Amino acid sequence: MSVELKERTVRYVAKSVPAMDGAGVRLKRAFGNLQGINLDPFLLLDDIHSDDPKDTIAGFPMHPHRGIETVSYLLDGKFEHRDSLGNHGVINSGEIQWMTAGSGIIHEEMPMQYNGSVRGFQLWVNLPGSHKMMQPKYQDIKRSKIKEASIDNSSTIKVLAGSFGNTSGPVEDIISRPTYLDIHIDPESEFKYVVPDNHTVMAYIIGGVAYFDSKRDKLITEDTLVVFDKGDEIKISTGNKDTRFLLMAGEPINEPVAWHGPIVMNTRKELIDAFKDLENGDFIKHDYHV
Image (cartoon, rainbow, N blue to C red; front, top):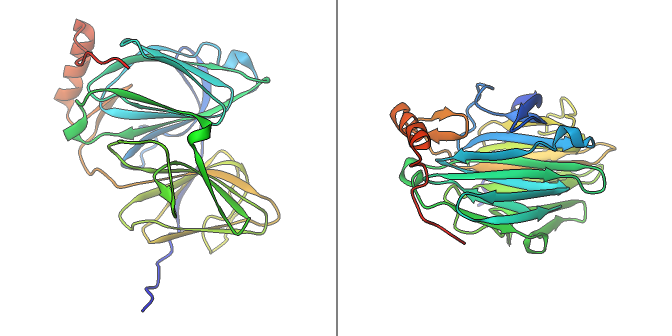
């Protein structure tokens, strides 16, 4: 006997807003701690997109993180990263850097243009209290490791993390276990995806336009965040133009969040202790080297 799936309708739509971070990087913030919407386990999504070197050249010099995972995904350009524990690397177009900050890491990320532009995203994913003080680690994922799936030759899905059908993402041993997909849909096509009812599900449109539920009330354009309501299945369709978007889904942690700047803990005391550690030179808790 077949089970009828409940469609997830659009609950929230908002354009990303101009912001500045790091040493003066101009970017667009899709969501963060000031938007007032709970997207547990996700905390922040920044869209770094510019053809002007002055917008990104200052980069993100050495800064701390504790209690979260940060995910950098590049469409164009390069990101050079290094940290206080001796890790160093560069990710190029189509590649991912997944950093589990855990108990604490101090790192820098410096965007570099390639062929005149840089376009990338940074997603923050929360860690549960049981893992906030775990040993930090990096995963640099090369483009050759990212697998693609397709549907009826009308949709192409790059699986960055999690899975789509029988295709799994290359990121391993991550605590939050989110699904992170880069999806392109041709004109006059439909994309369907089944997600557990209790998961948070959202999309961020990179380019083009689409309808994000079967009501087809409004075409949603690029640089827009779409958050879905509860249900089992999302249905996204296009008109006479294609679309490309990031799809993020994850099981909520359902724990208190104490967040200031680059540090996210469960309680205010833990947050204060983290900044005391930083001030006293005790922030790095593990002697970890690649």
